Image (cartoon, rainbow, N blue to C red; front, side, top):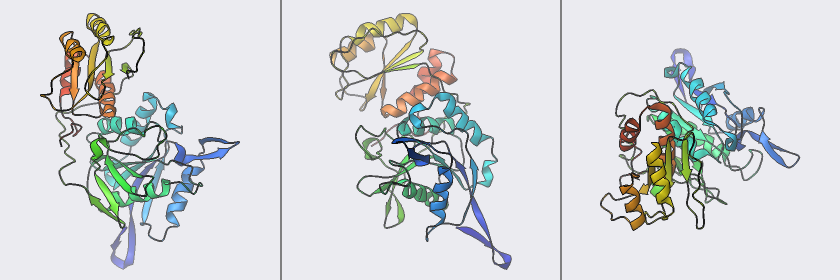
Length: 341
């Protein structure tokens, strides 16, 4: 879509195109998938050949070019800095290509790092390389363009076509990691933001994107959070040097194993924050070990997805100097990350 002015001249809408790599920017050589810089132009070429394309001017930047499983917090920072260096008000929106392997974490972290942005930021990925007939990258990209042109939301979103052919738009703080042996993207509690039906973007409900934005922040992202996912028989002899916070995932009943109690005690003695989650319903009775962990100093996190918790903790430890500041930040609904059903 462009803007028609006197004399029939069309001024095209501008979108900032941020290429960072991922399968959507990869090709296959010697039976191996890797990023190819040439493929970023393939995506735009495929889009511009569509009959229903929008008249868009894309400004292209490429701060990094990697597969997302290799992403570091330094890479995420480079992406954010490259965006903030631009004159953003001249753009209708931003599209970032990114890999599926760490998509959930990236979308959640980016939602904080760009929490005060005034235009939509769309993340697009692909399950297969663009030349593969199973690729959904072009559909994801086209949906992102349409969302930017048709809607007027700020913040971070993910557009993705699932295995069943349904295309969804997810809020950045709702996106979950793609499960093992799966090819679909979901939001926590299936709380997706919008769905594409017969080519039209239909919002699920008007009130499921509430950006609270409590306070003014200059966010940084840290890498001193230890994430523990419990399994039967796991040893709890973790090295804690260099960590400021531990996040221990609970089982579905909000329970944790008794072997975790000593780790809570050690963290408390060393001044390392210990969080347990994720839990829903504040009044729910805790199981014995979880209750004991709380008595030893563990902190319950409620009403957020695992991906949102981990990303928010990384932001908190990278931004704040004291444990009290981190705890206060984790208790606040900054950008609508808290789940309300």
